[in-house]
Length: 342
Image (cartoon, rainbow, N blue to C red; front, top):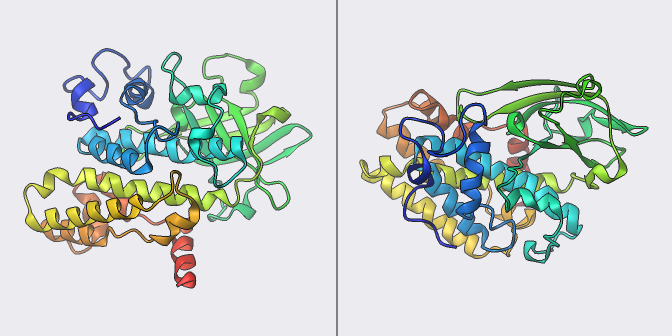
């Protein structure tokens, strides 16, 4: 399915609103309101084996051309790359398996192809004091009970299910945690403490801090036996998708400035060349081969365009630019890992 000529936000959005014309609103949630339209326009086709990863990235760029589109593209790419990646490997248990061979009759995949009801998955990895190291996670399942805290769950405020990364010896099993958003179950509520929040950048995206205390876990709640080796791949997919968001974000500025336009086009050409080489489902080894991704030229051009002293100051122009200059501890680990491999 090719890209629609019209940006999804422009096509379905209500004038002056963050929400679609016909459905949704603050009571529904930003991502939940838009997800049916994302499904309609094929944004989850890659996960279902219906298009290439490059086509998915192009969709993200087109979406990010509009201001609200950066928030929406971020929500979408996190669910596809991280939650979808966990489901893929959880169901195949084979790193080279293609999405197209998944038994898509599994109801877990309905979240990416059905709009009634709309389902959202989020992933909880980060914990207080974990420093980007899975071995420092403190979430554990003991005697069928899960206890722990996840400090930054992207899309968590709207999620129906959290894929919770735990620690068990040297492995990191992942379990489903159902939020039961409107259940009113007192017993469940006593086991869960939630704090929903937003950030200055991509402010429409809802994040969640979530604490569980002896939350009941069944054996069939495990969706992945070990997140460990997969973590690098999923983070690299997020970083590559941020390249696509930057390409979209800078489209309008590129029409005003030739240097920005030239650097943006270089990045578009690099993405095309890199992802044309990739297997049907890019793995960690392939993604690491192109890392760190070459955004410096475009970020420098933007810095000069606004007469700033460093790319870190771009967030003073638009807080969304913080997405493209912020490096967490795991990203720094990946940079060091790549240097060792050279």
